[in-house]
Image 1 (cartoon, one colour):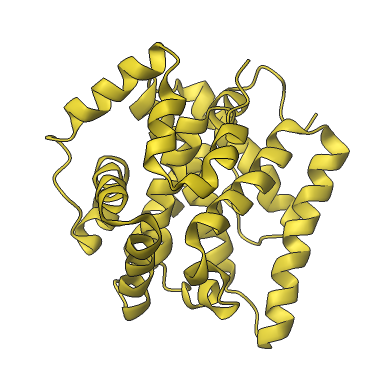
Image 2: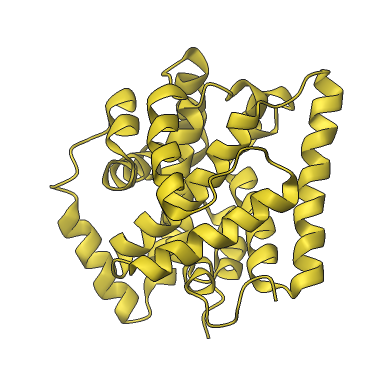
Length: 251
């Protein structure tokens, strides 16, 4: 199996609330990435950012929950899709941009689970790293960090050098507002303020983290009562309720 049945990675990516938090955080950092113009090339992201979220999650869950061969086939499909975009544009996506995405998936998996459930142990953090390292290796991404310590150093370097608040950053956040509506967008920004690294928060001028924590604690109570699906259905438009339900793979 590509990811062991009892792996913390399956626990993280099998929980709908954790997955939604992962992409709340990543959506802020995506907007700031210096290679964000690649996300605009096909027009699919700004046209339907929520739909793109669910599309990305489906691929991630296929990798995490399938047997080894189908998981590898899913990774190959992702690689082929990116190569197709490169051919259409007549240029290569920067290697650093590929690494940025992997680093985000690692970081926000760890941050989201810690925020909603508990901090991961060092062994669990390295397990998350290992899974996404193998994804990157299969995709042929160059200069990947070989261990957890190297990842931390490269992640810090990327946060300092690969982020900028550009016109596309502002436009993408406007698309989030347009597709979510005012109230849901406000909640997204509050969650982002809780999740993202200091560099991202500063560039996007995200709100202070502390005062929204009581709301999060209330959500945790609902989650322990198995009522998190009710909250999640409120947080995203009606058109996506079935997709939200499908995210949750907990038994």
